[in-house]
Image 1: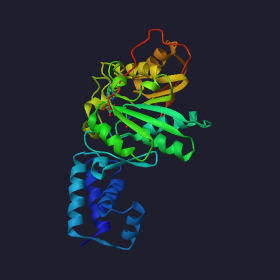
Image 2 (image 1 turned 180 degrees about the vertical axis):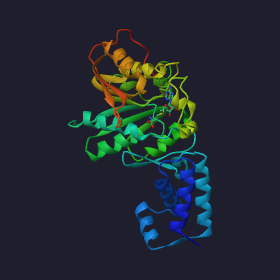
Image 3 (image 1 turned 90 degrees about the vertical axis):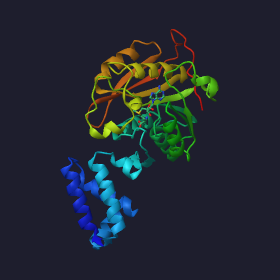
Image 4 (image 1 turned 135 degrees about the vertical axis):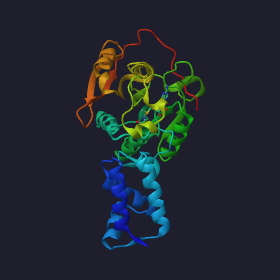
Amino acid sequence: MTEINQVIQHAQRQLFEAGIDSAKAEAAIIVAHVLEVERGKLGIMQALGERLTPKAVDSVSELVEARVTRTPLQYLTGTAGFYGLDVQVEPGVFIPRVETEILVETTLQHFDTAEGPLKILDLCTGTGAIAAALAEQLEQRNIPAAVWAVDLDPAAADLARRNTAEYNVTVLCADATDSGTLLAAADLEPHVGVFDAVVTNPPYIPTATPVTQPEAGFDPQQALYGGSADGTSIPLAIADQALQWLAPGGFFIMEHDHTHASELAAALEADPGWQDVVTVQDLTQTNRFVSAIRTDLPQPTPKTPPTLAQ
Ligand SMILES: C[S@@+](CC[C@H](N)C(=O)[O-])C[C@H]1O[C@@H](n2cnc3c(N)ncnc32)[C@H](O)[C@@H]1O
């Protein structure tokens, strides 16, 4: 039996030597995960000088070794915190990032005085984190809402279904940029042009940009790259699709690369389908989101509505 404090300190040293900034916090998270206790309870166990079984010490070592090779902590614990929720994550599906919480916050502020019922469409949903957070928060605020969430990747759609199971969320597996397939297979046809909001954190990294953060190497490429050298191809296609789903006056918000702010804002401003285009910053004062309101003008060139396959 080894004292918890010793195990945590050893893990912290290994993580620190591997260049992990938050080594102390991560060592505690790993031990708490192995012991299946909350961080607060772990603190009490440390204070009482409690000990770990050899089996638990081995489990901690295995996880620390994986973390030293920069496997994301969230894959090791199976969850990521997002807007107060514990979102399930698994290898192969994009881990929700803390900066995306601003997208949720901005959307909630927009509907601050709404009475509902609201219809919200989350395109490129990944784990379903945004859809789950919005559904949960609107429920807490007694604003009735129905959310639809779409991802191209069947593994992501599957995970999003699990993460949103307790809310009024319908998850669909489809290409959110493809005008040809989204509508036919799904139950969205009656909802064309009636959504109150389209929210999205699509892939947006320019194709030539190397991913510098070692953990991001574990994210699926399809979740990262925006489909063109400058990375705006998928975001622009998604904005185009949003026009078709939103009701006049509907709210659009999209996360984007920090290099895209002026180009995306200019593209939306040039389209008579949008008004009130605003660039929103993340917590590091980086331009990270564009929001806009759907005008009541029809689209200049009507397009086939996007299609969803369930
Ligand atoms: C950057 S991740 C964001 C996931 C989630 N919205 C979040 O913020 O955590 C982008 C997601 O878009 C999905 N995706 C990529 N291309 C897509 C497309 N054409 N249609 C629908 N989903 C797509 C990927 O599978 C991935 O889950």
